[in-house]
Length: 84
Ligand SMILES: [Zn+2]
Image (spheres, rainbow, N blue to C red):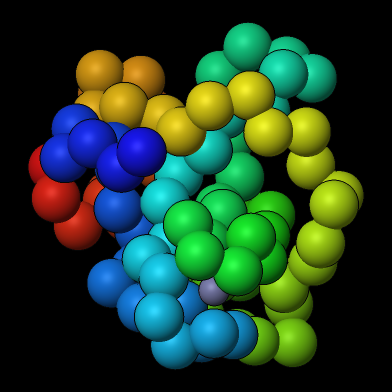
């Protein structure tokens, strides 16, 4: 379920060309983020890495939930969010 309050990092995934890349929260630490494709579930460590198909990983991060715009307010990730 994609809600418009989710933080969008890129409109199109470089791996599958279909999904958007959304900011996700991992449960290893509070407020620890990674980038996740909503469609193919490719992952990236950071918003900078998400531009590169060769930087994509899989099953490396524990997905807790998609980040909301409230989560990233005042965080360094805020500058990368398209729909803020
Ligand atoms: Zn994808």
